[in-house]
Length: 299
Image 1 (cartoon, rainbow, N blue to C red):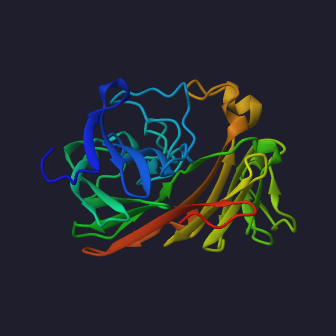
Image 2 (cartoon, rainbow, N blue to C red):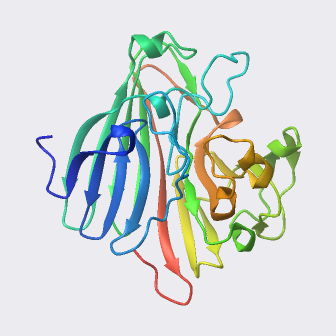
């Protein structure tokens, strides 16, 4: 593809889906046009910080399991529409390359999705433009900018459904959410007062925190590192791990995959859904940094 810097190559990825391989000065990544989906990222010389299921299906009709799926314009199942795909249509849509730039430190790739006859015929029939910008370096930044291009107000949900790789999820903990109330989807959506201690995974976790701080940290104790997750433009922080039973019940998730992954994701869901007037836009972003325990921050 013309116009790409030398650090970005368009190649055939798994399932022959088009993929951008980024080899920047300070970081590397793999980014599929299918869903604008970052499936791998790491600082130069390191393994991927993102978890990817070995059982993921790479085809044009199915969402990729792992990495950072883009959930838009709704999150989870859509109320009253059992026929609508879970988490919206963006994560299975074909995005187009909108440009790429290498500044000698970071490599930025922009992908674009616009409304089409298919999206206008879906459960969310509005006109829009979405741009996913991925900045690859010693840290990773992913942003989703949505612009309403129609002549009516629109409301949507969104999430950057980040799967983080950890050495042992039962030894990991999440700090920064202490005292923040949450909706517990494993308890039929019950509202729960915030925990006083860091979150430890001892069973299925499916929580939506409202009003969470902009930075939380996943302490990958067994891996000897911290993963610092930052968010902007995000009214919801979602934490998810399916545990043993949930993994076994999910066809494209390895039976033991739950042991080495934890989702901590930026989102605007439920009461935090975004409302835009004609011509208005909203940007939500997440960043990931690796902090070796006892060492300096990478990035």
